[in-house]
Length: 231
Ligand code: DX5
Ligand code: ZN
Image (cartoon, rainbow, N blue to C red):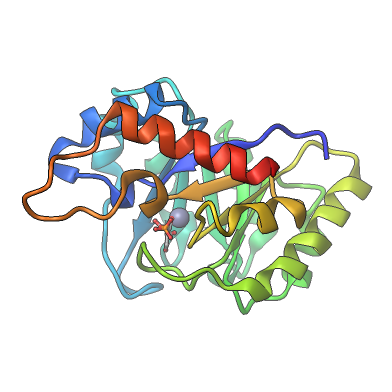
């Protein structure tokens, strides 16, 4: 596995009242990508942010925005996300009946195309497009919320997909999202994953009355994840 480890903090777990500052701080703390969770309240049972929020994130960092679309019919709004600053676009295979066309659409806009699989979606659902994508994202929780427990049974699926990537000889990132902590990241790494989304493990669980975490805490959290991934 040649790919260096990438850590993608999920802003879902940050303080939205200080969005720009949180993004700037986590970038300074050593993040590689900024992971943006877009939820529509239909495909997943939660509603988050849409295109108008992306420029605020973009203005705070030069890091690539890794935009995870948990929305029905993503092809209708991909252009909006790109126009507002998305660099990498992830679409769920469960939402794309014309998956190859949607990947072409993302490439046509000059951006990196990522296909995303829910925990119960088999690896085979993306086998036919492995030579066309830049990134595969395996969900290790059912999408919709941060702070859920890691689903171990997705690891064999990661191993299989890594095998296909190696066979293709192309430089494709294999990312995992959900329940990534210093406890779980090593197992995902050994299953062939090289990019790790982490919300709660970096931004922490906010508690009333406690001081807000900042640069030192985020830097330590990111370093601990990198160390645990290589252990
Ligand atoms: C879940 C989102 C994740 C989430 C991860 O639907 O796609 O990106 O923010 O949060 P943690 O790391 O807390 O599981
Ligand atoms: Zn996500």
